[in-house]
Length: 152
Image (cartoon, rainbow, N blue to C red; front, side, top):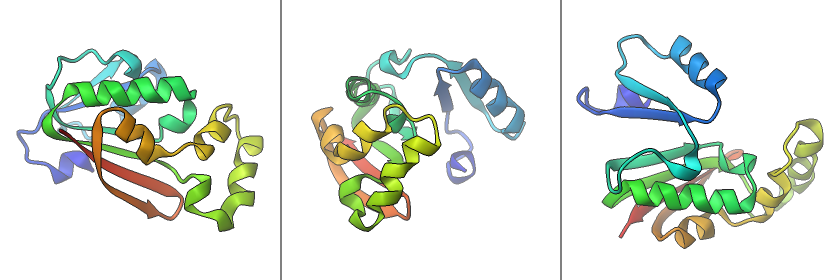
């Protein structure tokens, strides 16, 4: 979707720690989409400082412990140029939808999600701010929380 929404000269990169997910992405992405897929660790992004206009994270942060969440967001802030954007989409958190508390708390028992409970008790926008980014927008879209921030 990003490839379709951006100008054709946009350079796209996708990064995942799993070689299986990278292989699957290669299978499903359109052949004419110019995207570089990299198998690496988001805690130490293999990119130069201030080298991107935008960095995104999709449903990663609930999969990792709190200290890793902080490092990933710091790395995203590092690789985005001044005035660049950081966009994070992940699961809603307990404070976002108290009426869904029972379902949110039941999720990790149905799926193997060892860090989910610490994530749902965390504050995603505060984490983004702690990474040195200015949160410009926070929005809920059903079970997804979207936080947009800018690098000062």
